Length: 512
Image (cartoon, rainbow, N blue to C red; front, side, top):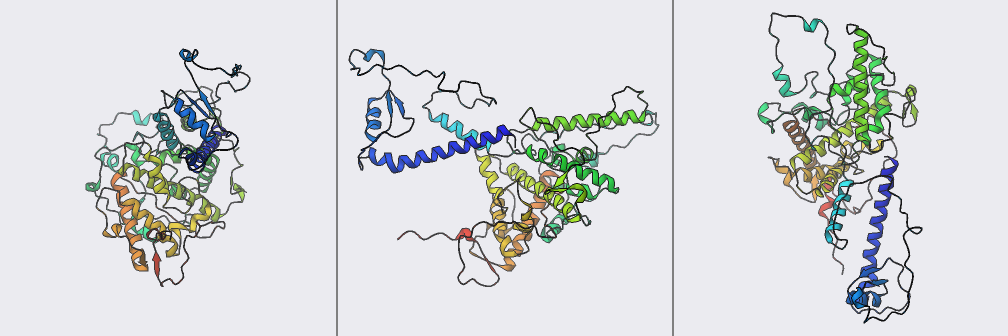
């Protein structure tokens, strides 16, 4: 988060606090005075007060002890009694008149007393609290991927007609089977129900929802975790991991504000970006076009510019740079890259899996449940965030890797499965009957069935809309300390064995 955005966040928190305090003061102090239940005796309140033309409002503010400034027209001078003549306080020297260091868009033009002003501010604040949605915001093509320079062989005459890859253009990029789980010591293990659901996705073309196919549907918000274990050469895997750690914060930050123009990138684009030594400046000495090394440097230079443009277009501050981490100084959880072991690499890939899964769940939910009201965006994002322990979509601790949906304890998984069940009820497609079940007690078998149906429904629905395999949630093979669960609302005095309780079905008793 940039300094300007952090400062704006603090200002918005201060504004919300002051508005809440004003509402509480009105309800507890000034409303009883207005209604005559209490009488005002004491000093005038230390608040900004009220400017008004209305004599009745002036009398009410005076009666409840709020500073009031009655504005009178010049036509009332002859009939008004002036007690004292005072000198007006000029803004210069008392109020900061300098221009704002950061310019923000105009969100309202009109009268200061109009309710529309407060509504416009409320809508902007809700959008400010929303994350960017790279998949659905424009459904535009992903960022440009430079093609490799053509060799002289590709320009030679051929008497045979070249084949067109129509099937590949419809079904997405070809390659390894992304519906099968890769096997590698550093790859985090899958959750069994989600692994089986992904493997059994029906890939028939009749299931596709949108007839229009866009390259953005095949893109990823973050690098695909399996990309790192697909490299045969260890040095390429090491280079990709170092590059990700070097630019990790920048790529996460680009999705933290709704106005970001971040777009999904294909697996090939992510692979090319992460496998290049970006800080090695290519030579600018002109060489013949037939020189293979010069063509390779030109290609690398183009991709370097692509990365720079992609990051700079997503960062709000014009002074931001691509990376503040020098090469060879990459760290993970305070450890230098040279000292990282297999469990550390497993944690890196788990975070990538979780980032992709949460962004793809949000993207699918927003695409299916479209709403014309922009203020509903943060509410819909909040419903998605309730499916995770910390209720965060971008910033979450590693300690969550064995909790929530990834917990081995079915009782702990149950609240988050029920949250996903309620989230998917709004999706306009045929759903399993168990999605409409609301009860206080869930048996162990029913909870297991619910988890399987949720995993099946999500993986299939995602494929129907995006035409590719989704990134599924995973867990770590080891436990990371520091997890802080949500506070317990109820205490079980005599719970039934092998039964999970839906606490949302429990309501407090009315006061006596």
